[in-house]
Structure formats: C-alpha cells, structure tokens
Length: 167
Length: 103
Image (tube, rainbow over all chains, first blue to last red; front, side, top):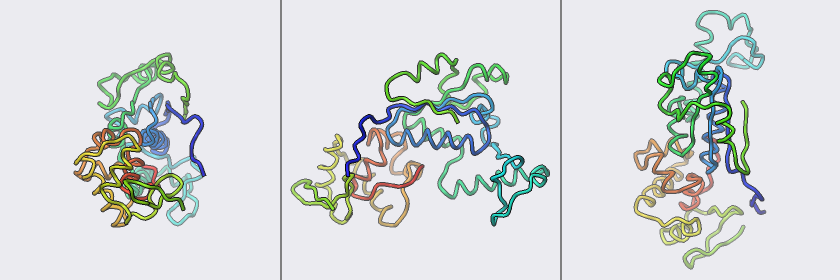
C-alpha cells in the first residue's frame, strides 16, 4: 500500500485562546506533533491562552472542576459540580492530571516550549489580548518569539498547504 | 512482506520502508538507508542510532523528549542531525520500528 500523499501539509498555525490545562496541552501536543513530522508550526496564544506563556502563570495552569460534565472521580463515578467548588479541589485535580501526564512523558509547559522551539517551531502572543490584560513582552516566557497583530498572524499563515487551527 | 536491497544485502521491510527484523541491521546498511534519506552518517549519527537501538531492544518507547534528556544528543542537535522528521528518519535508519507515540 502506498503512503504517498498528493499534497502533504506544509505549515500549521495553531491558535490557543483558553488557559486550562487541557486546552493549552491540546495546542502544545498538536504543535509539537507538527514539528516532529517536519511540518512548519506556529503557535499563537490569545485571550486566556496567554496564561500559558505568562511567566507568572505558565506553571500553575488548572483544569476546571465545575461545569465539566466529562469530569469523573477516580474509578469512573460522576464528579459532582458542588464538590468542584470546594477549596483545594481544583488544585488537587489539576495536580493529579499533571502527574498522570508526566507518567506518559508529557512535559511541563515550559519544557514543551523548549522541545517545540528546538525543532524550529515558533510561539507568538496576540497584541490585542496583551493590551487587554495589561501584559508586556517582559511578562512572557523567553520562548515567545514576538507579539503579533492579527494582520501579522495572517501574513505568517500565508503559503500553499497551510492550515489554521483554532482550539 | 517486501524485501529491499541495501549495500548489497537483502533486508525485510514493511510498506513504509521500516525494518521488520532489526537483527538484519548493520552499519553498512545504515549508511545506505541514510543515503536514501539524504543523510551522510557521522560518528554523532551512529551514537544516536546506537542509543535508539538499545532503547528499542530494552522494550522502551521512544520520544523526542527522552532522547533530548538522554545525554547522547540535545533536542536541537537531534533535529539538525536528522532534518525534517527526526524520530521517523532516525528509527528508519536504525532499523527499528516507527515509533507510535504522540510526543
């Protein structure tokens, strides 16, 4: 069976607009996966996604324990939303998720950025959202290559066989 | 099961060109496979290939992260040694199966 593709993907531009563990990691895994495949990859953070590249917040990402119907207790029983509002529960669940990811060799956010940039992937922040949240370039991780307007983002996304993915 | 000739030796490969029997691998064959991938092998390449084969023989899963942490090669240099898709290329040249992980 031939695995030849007629027109392989050349570039992906991935936008992450949310700051929960699962949203950020979905974008990180997709970006790193593209880099591993030899696909040019740009990762663009906007709105709450900026937490993932803000030095102060990037290592403290959480997953929401309220309003998440797919959340389960260990063992598979439903996770009551009322339990999720108790102090410490969100932190506990988030710590548990991180330890399970580590067991699968999924790196912490900052190390993930190292992997992505080592392979030639690029990470950007959204200028408008930065202004909104009163963030400066100095507040961001050193792995962030630049702060872009939406116009500049579309310029980056030019070329044949490019996909824009919004998560 | 397809067979392919590398450096005058017949090797069993799957449809993507990965070795189905890592025992058939040797350095001359690696040089020939690498040439097909557009890579001229150096000592540094062989150090990485050796490491990958050992890890595979130990039954461990291969990820770019673990290779970068191995002390054998930095992640950046791994990408430079096997440009494009390093893990896929390096495992092909090392005569071991294509890694199935996502990281």
